[in-house]
Image 1 (cartoon, rainbow, N blue to C red):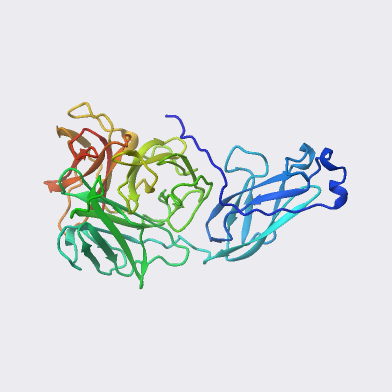
Image 2: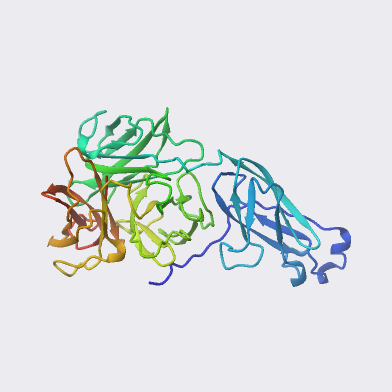
Length: 464
Protein backbone atom coordinates (compact mmCIF):
# COMPACT_ATOMS: atom_id res chain seq x y z
CA UNK A 1 0.00 0.00 0.00
CA UNK A 2 1.49 3.39 -0.90
CA UNK A 3 2.68 5.62 1.85
CA UNK A 4 0.26 8.45 2.68
CA UNK A 5 1.32 11.73 1.14
CA UNK A 6 2.65 14.21 3.66
CA UNK A 7 2.39 17.84 2.62
CA UNK A 8 3.44 20.33 5.28
CA UNK A 9 3.75 24.09 5.53
CA UNK A 10 4.93 25.96 8.62
CA UNK A 11 2.25 28.61 8.92
CA UNK A 12 2.13 29.20 12.67
CA UNK A 13 5.85 29.67 13.12
CA UNK A 14 7.95 32.32 14.77
CA UNK A 15 9.78 34.69 12.43
CA UNK A 16 13.29 35.57 13.61
CA UNK A 17 15.57 37.55 11.29
CA UNK A 18 19.24 38.23 11.90
CA UNK A 19 20.85 40.98 9.85
CA UNK A 20 24.45 41.10 8.74
CA UNK A 21 26.74 44.10 8.69
CA UNK A 22 26.42 46.87 6.10
CA UNK A 23 29.45 45.45 4.37
CA UNK A 24 27.58 42.18 3.86
CA UNK A 25 24.76 43.87 1.98
CA UNK A 26 26.71 46.56 0.21
CA UNK A 27 26.45 46.18 -3.50
CA UNK A 28 22.63 46.51 -3.67
CA UNK A 29 20.40 44.19 -5.57
CA UNK A 30 23.26 42.41 -7.27
CA UNK A 31 24.67 41.12 -3.98
CA UNK A 32 23.04 37.86 -2.94
CA UNK A 33 25.07 37.42 0.25
CA UNK A 34 23.24 36.14 3.35
CA UNK A 35 21.53 39.01 5.14
CA UNK A 36 18.88 37.31 7.28
CA UNK A 37 17.96 33.90 8.65
CA UNK A 38 14.24 33.21 8.91
CA UNK A 39 13.78 30.62 11.68
CA UNK A 40 10.63 28.52 12.13
CA UNK A 41 10.15 27.35 15.72
CA UNK A 42 6.46 27.24 16.55
CA UNK A 43 6.66 26.53 20.29
CA UNK A 44 8.25 28.49 23.11
CA UNK A 45 8.07 25.53 25.50
CA UNK A 46 8.11 21.73 25.32
CA UNK A 47 7.52 18.83 27.68
CA UNK A 48 10.30 16.36 28.39
CA UNK A 49 10.06 13.71 25.68
CA UNK A 50 8.70 16.07 23.03
CA UNK A 51 10.26 16.42 19.62
CA UNK A 52 9.61 19.43 17.44
CA UNK A 53 10.26 19.99 13.74
CA UNK A 54 12.13 23.27 13.12
CA UNK A 55 13.43 25.01 10.02
CA UNK A 56 15.40 27.96 8.69
CA UNK A 57 15.72 29.80 5.40
CA UNK A 58 18.59 32.13 4.51
CA UNK A 59 17.69 35.28 2.54
CA UNK A 60 19.66 38.08 0.93
CA UNK A 61 19.03 41.77 1.61
CA UNK A 62 16.08 41.86 -0.77
CA UNK A 63 14.31 38.98 0.96
CA UNK A 64 15.14 36.45 -1.72
CA UNK A 65 17.14 33.28 -1.25
CA UNK A 66 20.81 33.92 -0.63
CA UNK A 67 23.48 32.52 -2.90
CA UNK A 68 24.16 28.83 -2.50
CA UNK A 69 27.43 29.20 -0.63
CA UNK A 70 25.71 31.11 2.19
CA UNK A 71 22.67 28.89 2.73
CA UNK A 72 24.08 25.99 4.74
CA UNK A 73 22.56 26.25 8.25
CA UNK A 74 24.24 24.82 11.34
CA UNK A 75 22.13 24.34 14.47
CA UNK A 76 23.38 24.55 18.05
CA UNK A 77 21.81 24.03 21.48
CA UNK A 78 23.40 25.89 24.37
CA UNK A 79 22.36 23.22 26.88
CA UNK A 80 22.32 19.67 25.51
CA UNK A 81 21.08 18.31 28.86
CA UNK A 82 17.84 20.19 28.10
CA UNK A 83 17.57 20.04 24.28
CA UNK A 84 19.53 18.19 21.64
CA UNK A 85 19.17 18.73 17.89
CA UNK A 86 18.75 15.91 15.38
CA UNK A 87 19.72 16.65 11.78
CA UNK A 88 20.32 13.04 10.72
CA UNK A 89 16.63 12.32 10.15
CA UNK A 90 14.98 15.55 8.98
CA UNK A 91 11.21 15.74 9.36
CA UNK A 92 10.69 16.30 5.63
CA UNK A 93 12.65 15.97 2.39
CA UNK A 94 13.61 19.64 2.49
CA UNK A 95 16.81 21.74 2.46
CA UNK A 96 19.43 21.35 5.15
CA UNK A 97 17.86 24.11 7.27
CA UNK A 98 15.38 21.64 8.74
CA UNK A 99 15.99 19.59 11.90
CA UNK A 100 14.32 18.37 15.11
CA UNK A 101 14.53 19.56 18.67
CA UNK A 102 14.52 16.71 21.21
CA UNK A 103 13.53 17.71 24.75
CA UNK A 104 15.77 15.80 27.19
CA UNK A 105 15.31 17.50 30.57
CA UNK A 106 13.73 20.42 32.36
CA UNK A 107 15.31 23.86 31.89
CA UNK A 108 16.09 26.33 29.12
CA UNK A 109 18.31 26.19 26.07
CA UNK A 110 19.18 28.78 23.45
CA UNK A 111 18.70 27.37 19.97
CA UNK A 112 20.94 29.02 17.38
CA UNK A 113 20.90 28.78 13.60
CA UNK A 114 23.97 30.17 11.86
CA UNK A 115 25.78 30.26 8.57
CA UNK A 116 29.34 31.31 7.88
CA UNK A 117 28.19 34.97 7.88
CA UNK A 118 25.23 35.46 10.26
CA UNK A 119 23.23 33.81 13.04
CA UNK A 120 20.01 34.12 15.03
CA UNK A 121 18.74 32.52 18.24
CA UNK A 122 15.63 31.65 20.21
CA UNK A 123 15.23 30.49 23.83
CA UNK A 124 13.10 27.35 24.31
CA UNK A 125 11.92 26.11 27.72
CA UNK A 126 11.41 22.45 28.63
CA UNK A 127 9.16 21.56 31.55
CA UNK A 128 8.41 18.34 33.43
CA UNK A 129 10.39 15.62 35.21
CA UNK A 130 12.85 13.47 33.32
CA UNK A 131 10.68 10.34 33.47
CA UNK A 132 7.61 11.82 31.78
CA UNK A 133 5.48 9.03 30.38
CA UNK A 134 7.47 6.28 32.10
CA UNK A 135 4.83 5.76 34.79
CA UNK A 136 1.75 7.08 33.00
CA UNK A 137 -0.14 3.79 33.16
CA UNK A 138 -3.60 5.37 33.41
CA UNK A 139 -6.36 3.24 31.92
CA UNK A 140 -10.09 3.74 32.21
CA UNK A 141 -13.15 2.57 30.34
CA UNK A 142 -16.91 2.41 30.76
CA UNK A 143 -20.13 1.38 29.08
CA UNK A 144 -22.53 4.25 29.77
CA UNK A 145 -25.60 2.02 29.73
CA UNK A 146 -28.34 4.39 30.94
CA UNK A 147 -28.97 6.70 28.01
CA UNK A 148 -31.75 8.79 29.60
CA UNK A 149 -30.78 8.75 33.29
CA UNK A 150 -29.72 12.22 34.47
CA UNK A 151 -27.10 10.72 36.81
CA UNK A 152 -24.54 10.78 38.01
CA UNK A 153 -24.65 7.00 38.05
CA UNK A 154 -22.01 4.26 38.00
CA UNK A 155 -21.88 2.35 34.69
CA UNK A 156 -22.31 -1.43 34.75
CA UNK A 157 -19.53 -3.05 36.79
CA UNK A 158 -18.47 -5.68 34.25
CA UNK A 159 -17.75 -2.98 31.68
CA UNK A 160 -16.03 -0.29 33.71
CA UNK A 161 -12.45 0.04 34.94
CA UNK A 162 -10.33 2.76 36.58
CA UNK A 163 -6.64 1.95 37.03
CA UNK A 164 -6.45 4.47 39.87
CA UNK A 165 -9.11 2.64 41.85
CA UNK A 166 -11.47 5.62 41.82
CA UNK A 167 -15.12 5.76 40.87
CA UNK A 168 -16.50 6.23 37.37
CA UNK A 169 -19.70 8.18 36.88
CA UNK A 170 -21.77 9.21 33.88
CA UNK A 171 -23.99 12.29 33.84
CA UNK A 172 -26.55 13.29 31.21
CA UNK A 173 -26.60 17.08 30.87
CA UNK A 174 -29.36 17.15 28.24
CA UNK A 175 -30.59 15.06 25.32
CA UNK A 176 -27.55 13.39 23.77
CA UNK A 177 -24.99 15.29 25.89
CA UNK A 178 -23.02 13.39 28.54
CA UNK A 179 -19.97 13.65 30.80
CA UNK A 180 -18.02 10.60 31.99
CA UNK A 181 -15.84 11.25 35.04
CA UNK A 182 -12.83 9.06 35.91
CA UNK A 183 -12.03 9.95 39.51
CA UNK A 184 -8.31 10.38 40.21
CA UNK A 185 -7.17 9.93 36.58
CA UNK A 186 -6.30 13.58 35.91
CA UNK A 187 -3.39 14.24 33.57
CA UNK A 188 -0.25 15.20 35.49
CA UNK A 189 2.33 17.66 34.14
CA UNK A 190 3.72 16.31 30.88
CA UNK A 191 1.55 13.20 30.77
CA UNK A 192 -0.33 12.34 27.60
CA UNK A 193 -3.61 10.59 26.91
CA UNK A 194 -6.04 9.49 24.24
CA UNK A 195 -9.80 8.90 24.31
CA UNK A 196 -12.04 6.90 21.97
CA UNK A 197 -15.83 6.48 22.00
CA UNK A 198 -18.45 4.36 20.19
CA UNK A 199 -22.25 4.41 20.25
CA UNK A 200 -23.76 1.21 21.67
CA UNK A 201 -27.14 -0.40 21.02
CA UNK A 202 -28.63 2.65 19.32
CA UNK A 203 -30.91 2.76 16.29
CA UNK A 204 -29.06 2.95 12.97
CA UNK A 205 -28.21 6.55 12.22
CA UNK A 206 -27.10 7.50 15.75
CA UNK A 207 -23.42 7.82 16.61
CA UNK A 208 -21.36 9.28 19.44
CA UNK A 209 -18.20 11.36 19.45
CA UNK A 210 -16.00 13.43 21.76
CA UNK A 211 -15.95 17.08 22.79
CA UNK A 212 -12.30 17.10 23.89
CA UNK A 213 -11.42 15.96 27.42
CA UNK A 214 -9.51 17.36 30.37
CA UNK A 215 -8.78 17.66 34.07
CA UNK A 216 -11.30 18.72 36.71
CA UNK A 217 -10.26 18.76 40.38
CA UNK A 218 -8.00 15.75 40.10
CA UNK A 219 -10.33 13.80 37.81
CA UNK A 220 -10.44 13.27 34.05
CA UNK A 221 -13.75 14.29 32.49
CA UNK A 222 -14.74 13.12 29.02
CA UNK A 223 -17.68 14.96 27.35
CA UNK A 224 -19.56 12.86 24.78
CA UNK A 225 -22.19 13.96 22.26
CA UNK A 226 -24.56 11.47 20.59
CA UNK A 227 -26.58 12.57 17.59
CA UNK A 228 -27.73 11.81 14.08
CA UNK A 229 -25.80 12.85 10.99
CA UNK A 230 -27.83 16.06 10.68
CA UNK A 231 -26.68 17.06 14.18
CA UNK A 232 -29.95 16.24 15.98
CA UNK A 233 -28.98 15.30 19.55
CA UNK A 234 -30.24 11.83 20.45
CA UNK A 235 -29.93 9.85 23.67
CA UNK A 236 -27.72 6.80 23.28
CA UNK A 237 -25.65 4.36 25.24
CA UNK A 238 -21.94 4.37 24.42
CA UNK A 239 -18.53 3.02 25.33
CA UNK A 240 -15.54 5.20 26.15
CA UNK A 241 -11.85 4.30 26.51
CA UNK A 242 -9.21 6.53 28.17
CA UNK A 243 -5.55 5.57 28.15
CA UNK A 244 -2.28 7.14 29.20
CA UNK A 245 1.02 6.97 27.36
CA UNK A 246 2.13 3.80 29.18
CA UNK A 247 -1.23 2.15 29.78
CA UNK A 248 0.12 -1.15 28.42
CA UNK A 249 3.63 -1.09 29.99
CA UNK A 250 6.94 0.45 28.94
CA UNK A 251 7.73 -1.96 26.12
CA UNK A 252 4.41 -1.99 24.22
CA UNK A 253 4.44 0.06 20.98
CA UNK A 254 1.63 2.60 21.29
CA UNK A 255 0.80 5.77 19.39
CA UNK A 256 -2.03 8.26 19.41
CA UNK A 257 -2.75 11.80 18.32
CA UNK A 258 -5.45 14.41 18.21
CA UNK A 259 -5.36 16.72 15.21
CA UNK A 260 -4.96 20.35 16.36
CA UNK A 261 -5.75 22.83 14.88
CA UNK A 262 -8.24 21.34 12.44
CA UNK A 263 -7.79 23.61 9.41
CA UNK A 264 -4.06 24.31 9.27
CA UNK A 265 -1.11 22.60 7.64
CA UNK A 266 1.73 22.08 10.05
CA UNK A 267 4.64 19.89 11.02
CA UNK A 268 4.34 19.29 14.73
CA UNK A 269 5.32 16.47 16.99
CA UNK A 270 4.04 15.71 20.47
CA UNK A 271 1.58 17.48 22.77
CA UNK A 272 -0.62 16.43 25.69
CA UNK A 273 -2.87 14.41 23.38
CA UNK A 274 -0.19 12.92 21.11
CA UNK A 275 2.37 10.19 21.75
CA UNK A 276 4.72 7.83 19.92
CA UNK A 277 6.26 5.35 22.35
CA UNK A 278 9.07 4.30 19.99
CA UNK A 279 10.70 7.42 18.59
CA UNK A 280 8.56 10.28 19.97
CA UNK A 281 8.32 11.66 16.42
CA UNK A 282 4.90 12.40 14.96
CA UNK A 283 4.24 14.27 11.72
CA UNK A 284 0.86 15.88 11.05
CA UNK A 285 -0.42 17.29 7.78
CA UNK A 286 -3.73 18.41 6.32
CA UNK A 287 -3.93 17.25 2.71
CA UNK A 288 -7.40 18.62 1.96
CA UNK A 289 -10.77 19.40 3.52
CA UNK A 290 -11.31 16.86 6.27
CA UNK A 291 -8.24 14.86 5.25
CA UNK A 292 -5.37 14.46 7.71
CA UNK A 293 -2.08 12.54 7.58
CA UNK A 294 -0.42 11.14 10.70
CA UNK A 295 3.05 9.62 10.49
CA UNK A 296 4.42 7.69 13.51
CA UNK A 297 8.02 6.90 12.49
CA UNK A 298 9.41 3.75 14.08
CA UNK A 299 6.10 2.48 15.46
CA UNK A 300 6.04 -0.57 13.16
CA UNK A 301 7.37 -3.75 14.77
CA UNK A 302 7.97 -6.58 12.24
CA UNK A 303 5.45 -9.38 12.60
CA UNK A 304 3.30 -7.53 15.15
CA UNK A 305 -0.30 -6.96 13.98
CA UNK A 306 -1.91 -3.57 14.64
CA UNK A 307 -5.30 -1.92 14.70
CA UNK A 308 -6.64 1.65 14.58
CA UNK A 309 -9.52 3.51 16.17
CA UNK A 310 -10.61 7.00 15.11
CA UNK A 311 -13.22 9.23 16.78
CA UNK A 312 -14.31 12.74 15.85
CA UNK A 313 -13.66 15.54 18.35
CA UNK A 314 -16.12 18.26 17.41
CA UNK A 315 -19.08 20.40 18.46
CA UNK A 316 -20.71 19.95 15.07
CA UNK A 317 -22.03 16.95 13.12
CA UNK A 318 -18.79 15.47 11.78
CA UNK A 319 -17.77 11.83 11.99
CA UNK A 320 -14.17 10.65 11.46
CA UNK A 321 -12.62 7.35 10.41
CA UNK A 322 -9.41 5.67 9.29
CA UNK A 323 -9.44 6.10 5.52
CA UNK A 324 -6.06 4.59 4.69
CA UNK A 325 -3.07 3.16 6.49
CA UNK A 326 0.52 2.13 5.86
CA UNK A 327 1.64 -0.73 8.09
CA UNK A 328 5.13 -0.66 6.58
CA UNK A 329 6.07 2.93 7.44
CA UNK A 330 3.64 3.86 10.22
CA UNK A 331 1.28 6.20 8.37
CA UNK A 332 -2.45 6.78 8.73
CA UNK A 333 -4.81 8.94 6.71
CA UNK A 334 -7.89 9.95 8.71
CA UNK A 335 -10.89 11.61 7.09
CA UNK A 336 -13.81 13.53 8.57
CA UNK A 337 -17.17 14.28 7.00
CA UNK A 338 -20.75 15.35 7.53
CA UNK A 339 -23.85 14.17 5.67
CA UNK A 340 -22.94 16.74 3.00
CA UNK A 341 -19.44 15.38 2.40
CA UNK A 342 -15.86 15.98 3.64
CA UNK A 343 -15.56 18.52 6.47
CA UNK A 344 -12.77 19.72 8.74
CA UNK A 345 -12.85 18.33 12.27
CA UNK A 346 -10.40 17.02 14.86
CA UNK A 347 -9.90 13.25 14.66
CA UNK A 348 -8.65 11.47 17.77
CA UNK A 349 -6.60 8.55 16.50
CA UNK A 350 -5.26 5.47 18.31
CA UNK A 351 -2.60 3.06 16.96
CA UNK A 352 -2.97 -0.09 19.11
CA UNK A 353 -0.72 -3.16 19.20
CA UNK A 354 -1.37 -5.06 22.43
CA UNK A 355 -3.06 -4.68 25.80
CA UNK A 356 -1.89 -5.23 29.36
CA UNK A 357 0.18 -8.34 30.03
CA UNK A 358 -1.96 -11.08 31.54
CA UNK A 359 -5.23 -9.45 30.45
CA UNK A 360 -7.49 -10.21 27.51
CA UNK A 361 -7.51 -8.16 24.34
CA UNK A 362 -8.30 -8.68 20.70
CA UNK A 363 -8.92 -6.82 17.47
CA UNK A 364 -9.98 -7.47 13.90
CA UNK A 365 -10.60 -5.70 10.62
CA UNK A 366 -13.38 -6.50 8.18
CA UNK A 367 -12.18 -5.42 4.75
CA UNK A 368 -14.04 -7.76 2.39
CA UNK A 369 -17.69 -6.69 2.59
CA UNK A 370 -18.92 -8.83 -0.30
CA UNK A 371 -18.45 -12.23 1.38
CA UNK A 372 -20.76 -13.80 3.97
CA UNK A 373 -17.80 -15.10 5.99
CA UNK A 374 -14.85 -13.00 4.87
CA UNK A 375 -11.34 -13.94 5.99
CA UNK A 376 -9.73 -11.58 8.46
CA UNK A 377 -6.54 -9.69 7.59
CA UNK A 378 -3.71 -11.21 9.68
CA UNK A 379 -1.82 -7.88 9.74
CA UNK A 380 -4.86 -6.23 11.40
CA UNK A 381 -6.08 -9.09 13.61
CA UNK A 382 -5.04 -10.53 16.96
CA UNK A 383 -6.55 -12.60 19.76
CA UNK A 384 -4.68 -12.78 23.06
CA UNK A 385 -6.31 -16.15 23.82
CA UNK A 386 -4.61 -17.68 20.81
CA UNK A 387 -7.97 -18.64 19.34
CA UNK A 388 -9.32 -17.95 15.88
CA UNK A 389 -11.03 -14.70 14.89
CA UNK A 390 -13.94 -15.02 12.46
CA UNK A 391 -16.44 -12.59 11.00
CA UNK A 392 -19.88 -13.12 9.49
CA UNK A 393 -22.31 -10.90 7.61
CA UNK A 394 -25.79 -11.31 9.12
CA UNK A 395 -27.67 -8.92 6.84
CA UNK A 396 -27.19 -5.60 5.09
CA UNK A 397 -24.95 -3.56 7.39
CA UNK A 398 -24.97 -6.17 10.21
CA UNK A 399 -21.88 -8.16 11.15
CA UNK A 400 -20.54 -10.35 13.92
CA UNK A 401 -16.89 -10.78 14.88
CA UNK A 402 -16.13 -13.76 17.15
CA UNK A 403 -12.94 -14.10 19.21
CA UNK A 404 -12.59 -17.76 20.16
CA UNK A 405 -11.51 -18.26 23.77
CA UNK A 406 -11.75 -14.56 24.64
CA UNK A 407 -15.00 -14.84 26.60
CA UNK A 408 -15.29 -12.98 29.89
CA UNK A 409 -14.37 -15.14 32.91
CA UNK A 410 -16.12 -14.75 36.24
CA UNK A 411 -15.26 -11.34 37.65
CA UNK A 412 -13.77 -10.24 34.34
CA UNK A 413 -14.24 -6.88 32.66
CA UNK A 414 -13.80 -5.48 29.17
CA UNK A 415 -14.85 -2.75 26.82
CA UNK A 416 -15.33 -2.77 23.04
CA UNK A 417 -14.92 -0.06 20.40
CA UNK A 418 -15.67 0.09 16.69
CA UNK A 419 -14.37 2.50 14.06
CA UNK A 420 -15.36 2.72 10.39
CA UNK A 421 -12.65 2.03 7.84
CA UNK A 422 -11.90 3.10 4.25
CA UNK A 423 -15.11 4.92 3.17
CA UNK A 424 -16.07 8.31 4.60
CA UNK A 425 -19.73 7.88 3.63
CA UNK A 426 -20.50 5.25 6.28
CA UNK A 427 -20.50 5.07 10.08
CA UNK A 428 -20.18 1.92 12.22
CA UNK A 429 -21.33 1.42 15.82
CA UNK A 430 -21.80 -1.39 18.33
CA UNK A 431 -25.05 -3.32 18.41
CA UNK A 432 -23.90 -5.48 21.32
CA UNK A 433 -21.26 -7.88 22.57
CA UNK A 434 -21.59 -10.99 24.70
CA UNK A 435 -19.77 -14.03 26.04
CA UNK A 436 -21.13 -17.38 24.87
CA UNK A 437 -19.22 -20.27 26.39
CA UNK A 438 -15.51 -19.64 25.92
CA UNK A 439 -15.96 -17.11 23.11
CA UNK A 440 -16.72 -13.42 22.84
CA UNK A 441 -18.87 -12.16 19.96
CA UNK A 442 -19.22 -8.52 18.91
CA UNK A 443 -22.13 -7.40 16.74
CA UNK A 444 -21.55 -4.33 14.56
CA UNK A 445 -23.93 -2.21 12.50
CA UNK A 446 -22.96 0.16 9.71
CA UNK A 447 -25.14 2.83 8.09
CA UNK A 448 -24.91 5.81 5.79
CA UNK A 449 -25.42 9.42 6.94
CA UNK A 450 -29.15 9.07 6.28
CA UNK A 451 -29.33 6.17 8.73
CA UNK A 452 -29.92 3.48 6.10
CA UNK A 453 -27.99 0.22 6.64
CA UNK A 454 -24.98 -0.26 4.36
CA UNK A 455 -22.17 -2.78 4.19
CA UNK A 456 -19.08 -0.99 5.41
CA UNK A 457 -15.57 -1.85 6.45
CA UNK A 458 -14.62 -1.45 10.12
CA UNK A 459 -12.11 -2.19 12.89
CA UNK A 460 -13.21 -3.67 16.21
CA UNK A 461 -11.16 -3.55 19.43
CA UNK A 462 -11.63 -5.46 22.71
CA UNK A 463 -9.65 -4.36 25.79
CA UNK A 464 -9.71 -5.76 29.35
